[in-house]
Image 1 (cartoon, rainbow, N blue to C red):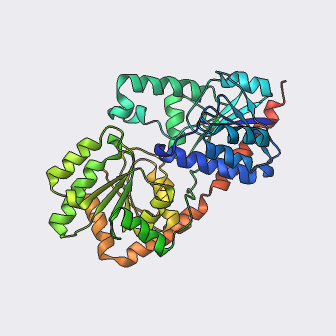
Image 2 (tube, rainbow, N blue to C red):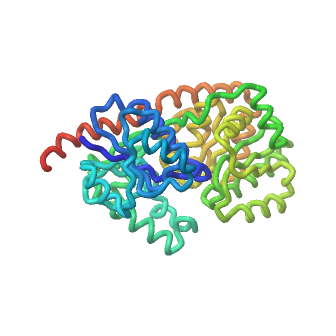
Image 3 (cartoon, rainbow, N blue to C red):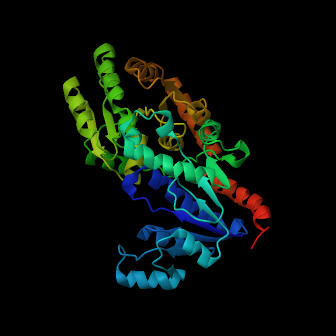
Length: 396
């Protein structure tokens, strides 16, 4: 079957979306020969690194909707020749798919462009339905945009991929989709980068003027990421338990950072809170390796990537007890009510008081991460495509 795979081309600053997209792309290139399907990668915003990745594969073609404006002209011509890229100026993915004879499209992320051919949709969360009071999903315009996209994307899909049974239940409930069309493919533990040497780690710590043993929270500054209650927990750790821990915040500004900075100052903990902004994958690995624990306290679920990153690298996890989180993380994390600063502080203190418990969490995290690999995720999608091929052959 001729299959299109749509890559929206997230920038690195997008965080989890960029990580997921790159992981899927690299793995698809690695194991595309394991599938008999004829695969074409589509992108409207092809970054140079995406092009370089696809150049490694003999089994995937590439189709761009626009010009490679970010790539020097000399390199542009070379990679076009190398990849035999079909350059178009089409405004519509459907037109491009028809031109290439694509029979099914896999949207690897929730970013969606309407097509008339069958497709496999991906849904990460429906928080605009579940928690519409958060401004980033609930202001009128944003809520309406999300609802319009999901109403069309989900209901017209041949299959919908989601990361958990909780997600399956939510999709079926909100959009009246038969559960047999909603396939659970657990999110993979990102590879990010290999563990770094002590010298490399120290270089990163020196760059940011940090010492090992801090709490780490890699999350963009959206309100739902719940930095505020984590700051209150840090204040409790200092005042109630005399625990002089630092907190390292990593992530791009999304409109809430000024408020979080003011709260930090009002609490008098500004010397213990380090806002690093966007960091590279290698720097993030160094931070995971140096952290006392990941405190991932988002209000959104059911699936999140950073706890899986921490598992794979060997950083213990304290996570929000949101719907579906235990399904994703199993017994490899300590779960806390994200709106309760005292509960967060007590969870951190429990790891400080019991090194064996911390070590056990790390071991469980390794085991959990080994169960959910990117290769397994892509192979699950190959199986869905194999199943649909038997249906798709019914018409031209």
